Amino acid sequence: MTLEIISAEQVLFKGEATAVTLPGEMGSFTVLKNHASLISVLVPGIVRYKASDSSEHEIEVKGGIADVDNNVVSVCIY
Image 1 (tube, helix red, strand yellow):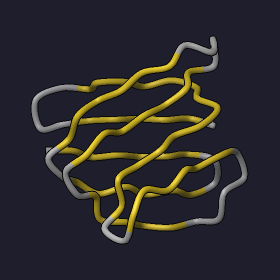
Image 2 (cartoon, one colour):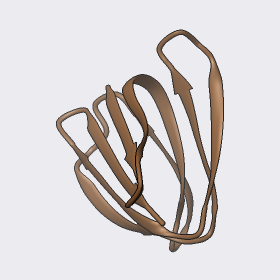
Image 3 (spheres, helix red, strand yellow):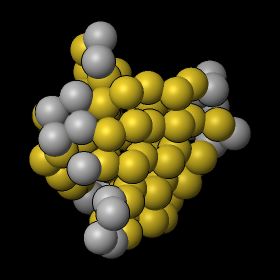
C-alpha cells in the first residue's frame, strides 16, 4: 500500500509500506493492505510504519488526521 505522511512544512515519507500503526482518538490501530476505507482523528502519540524494505520507522505526532482508501494511507500531522 502507499503511505504518505505530511506536515505543514514537509513530506516526511512517501512510498510503499506494509503496515502503519496510528494513534487514533479511540486507541491505536494498525492499517494493512486492503484495509476498509476510514477517516480518523489522530491524537498525540507515535506513528509507526514498516516500509516495503522491512525497515521500521517512528514519528512522534501532536495530532492530525488519517485517511485510508483503496490501499492509500494519507496522514496529515501537526
